Image (cartoon, rainbow, N blue to C red; front, side):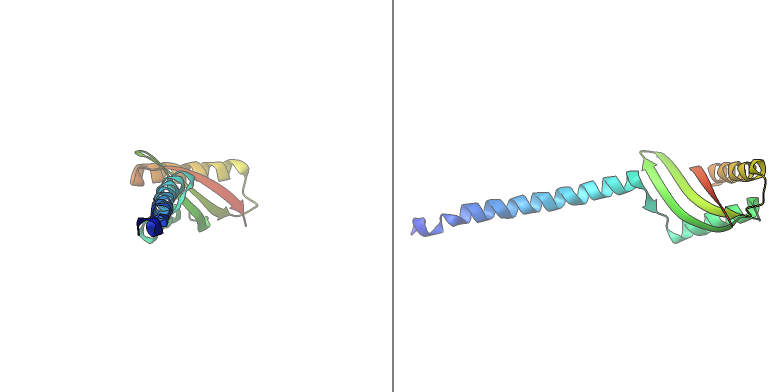
Length: 117
């Protein structure tokens, strides 16, 4: 009778291996997404849009928002549109002003990418 149940050991080993791989994938996915950039929740997005509107009224369509977490350090990347006829120095100053405001109000290091309209 014991001879007919030999296969159980192999099947259980395969099942446990699949469980370990599934768990490892979940852990790696969570860690990688925080490093590569996560989508911003709706409340945070609204707060960022308020800051951008207050600091740079000419900026439109805040998009491509991603949060990157490195331990306690949080970085935000975002894109905005500005009129294409603006001087480069003015565009640069607006981006820096937005980054400073986000740093002060939300305690995040921001990088603003500007796209021309």
